[in-house]
Length: 230
Image 1 (cartoon, rainbow, N blue to C red):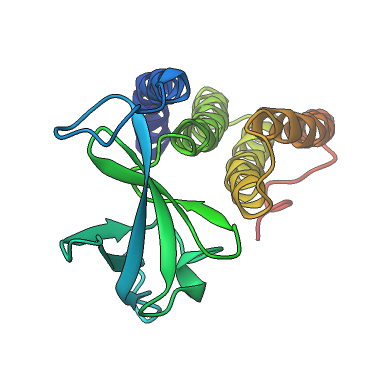
Image 2: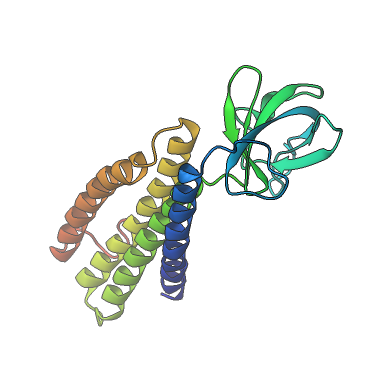
């Protein structure tokens, strides 16, 4: 039950982060194109040509993001990191020519010579879906786990209600996992952001319908205390 409350708290904390990320995305999309290269950090967007000096994808590490060092025509180095290696970072080689989109003093987007683009870790466009996917995963899993735990706790020795609570808890796992998998598919295939809640909602409805079937079966005594356990 404590774990369920913790997951709900994490999910709830992601909601304001999601809204803040949405606001940042709107500000980025509304930002004008710079009429000239700004001298100081600016709210307008401008493109800058770079030459790749080095790339390190950190393939052997799960805790370090892919990164690259870019050179301005003046020779000044500019360090960027990426959330993942594809589609641009994995193909970069030293001396490659790339174009970076700069906003508020950060390279938020990088395009290679083939026209492929990838957001950097500072990019504002992928942040809302990341936060939304995390919120859906934590809230759905936490809610199912809490409801199932309370149901079993108040069963007071009633095996049927205890089994029903267990079915609710077990179905919280695929609800949370589906949110993460949908987020991964949306990011990997560059689907529009609105596809995340739509796809998750459809699959979640099927999972919930299946859960209701198991709960009804448990209440009818068709699922014993040990049924449904891995």
